[in-house]
Amino acid sequence: MIKVGIVGGTGYTGVELLRILATHPEAQLTAITSRKEDGLPVADMYPSLRGRVPLAFSSPDKANLNDCDVVFFATPHGVAMAQTPELLAAGVKVIDLAADFRLKDVAQFQQWYGIPHTCPDVLHEAVYGLPELNREAIKSARVIGNPGCYPTTMQLGFYPLLKAGIIDASNLIADCKSGVSGAGRKAEIGILFSEASDNFKAYAVAGHRHVPETVEQLQKMCAAPVNLIFTPHLVPMIRGMHSTLYAKLTTEISNEALQELFESTYRDEQFVDVMPFGSHPETRSTRGSNMLRIALHRPANGATLIVLVVQDNLMKGAAGQAVQCMNLMFGLQENCGLTHVPLLP
Image (cartoon, rainbow, N blue to C red; front, side, top):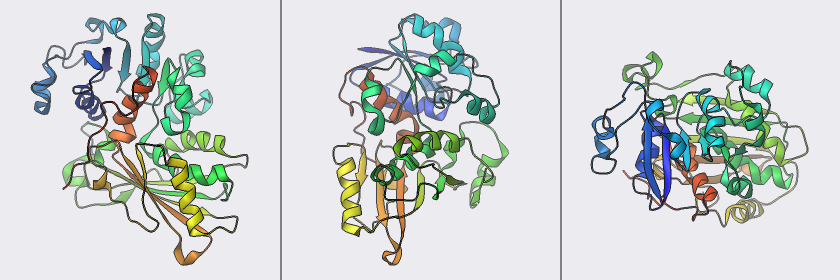
């Protein structure tokens, strides 16, 4: 059994990790930390886990994280890099769901997150945890930088096109929407029910932290310089993400060939569903699962290709993807503990 620790178990990604790992056949929950809730039984905060997670939260100094095989960080940016060197020295693998190990460019990290990077040597060896594009490197990694939710949809949506060299990489547009849980479990005016319900708005239009992360990864897919316009929106639902991606085709290609390009790229991927051409994937078709669904559209058979991508932002966009990485790191079947059927209605 893999002994698992979770740092920051009280937030939405933390409890999602708990939900997955509580029934994972090869994982043993060993420690769940929270300074504020030290001693509180997990099931008292999250009754959905009654009978599944018998542990109590513990402060980090009591958690014995060094005894774990892997530690997940479901924490604000900056926490993982402060503790990771000690964990690595103790032989513990690390999967960070924040941004500490996503960006290889330290200057970019410091610019967008406003804090210094305290362990650039660990960052150098960290592996970006998008299994569909980085599977072999993940298998041998000690440290994983789990991708952001929006970047997951953008990368998997643009990848087949950039790899094939059939779109203008300098003119990529991503119009994305996320449920309120993407903002985390906190008291903040903009995500209160009375503020977010019955409302729809864009945010961070001038620049979002996920742009440099996404561009850094997209640039690996093609030789041409990548330019991305990314506009995120907040929608009045709890969980779910819908990304509408726009790309200009640079070569003559049929709709059938485009569909085959995506189907062949993801044919062996358990968590990527390429739907029939012209489909309209819905966020609820992925709710509570690790599935990501893609559909292609080509208005008037013109030069603009539209790629629709949906996922659960807390699953494939966060905790589910992190467990997918853990499975690879420990030689397990990649779908182990992740075969949840989406919740409907």
